[in-house]
Length: 501
Ligand code: ZN
Image (tube, rainbow, N blue to C red; front, side, top):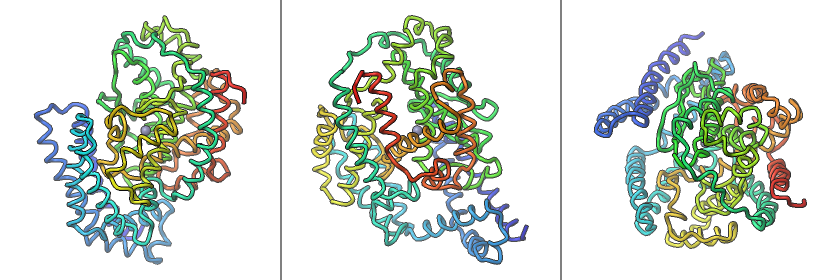
């Protein structure tokens, strides 16, 4: 190993120790810090994140990366270190181009817009949020001019969350979905089922925790490298592959929420736990591609978790851990977890109409960044699209355009990754069945860990080192297509809703 590489690794180790503390502080703040203790944590968090940012943009870092990128050093690196140097040099150059003043304004406005959004949502008044949304849009455009000069703004934003993805590709995928799903969903909704009162009763939160633990163990979440906390909104966080944590929330009168959050976050966590441990504590050792990450959580949540056969080997145990389930036959449960309905709120949507919630947001973002639609016109546009895709109109802004926090945070371009994840899942399901056999049979026979092992080997192991497009091509041998997902929806829901296809 060259002296320079050794020096570089020492430097990264130090940076990583700060990052470790930052992650721990964040976890503690979200899960157990008392209200009055938050301030002290925020101060420490600000201190350590400023340190990390200073180290990552220091002159020393710039010099090391420049030297390591030269053939004399670079050619001698292993593939892993070639990836790390290339990725860090790209991020370094990108960060260096952003004027310090602009970055500061961006971070401040982000915090303000976040607070105003909470208030505006509570009051259901878009006009309060509109000026801050405008500021976030303007700042996002300005930042993109520095980070991705010469690239069309919205493409640059999409690329930040799903590298290698652009709007021309997404347009093709989403249009294909619309063409088939709009008429298909209309057919499903024509056979609308009433709400099932069986799921409206009391479901003991302690029982829900036990069910969650059963599910996490069942799908292959490793306890020696993971733990579970409780928060308002579930999320997953990782220190490295050996310490991955997730959270959940337990509603007394909605057991399906914690069940499917457990399986969803479990999918994210299993991904992080099974990345090549050689990549730990480097930029290779996590997955920054949001679509690819979502493909794993949504594979567990939807493709597996909403399949009746997933539940066959464990449904009796559910009744033992949470007795309210003893009264609900598996068939009723299966119908409920696949109940398609046109609803206002994205996070509560079923897996089919969920596609429309994302397509709507994607088209809104294109209207903002491409067509420069004035901010004041956005609620009307939102409502019009809800009518087009779901034949419903939100009663107010809180139920409509104000429901998600993403835009207040500057997360423009993030939404499409959720649906890209499902599109990848359609393809992964096809390939899994070619290689391992029929998924219904695998699940029926309790062979879920074989599926997890397959995903570990095909997707998780590579962490950040393969871009989503390349990962899907490598595993499925094909370019990305929405056809498998559409076929999956049609086969599954034509049976549930007795529709001729
Ligand atoms: Zn997720």
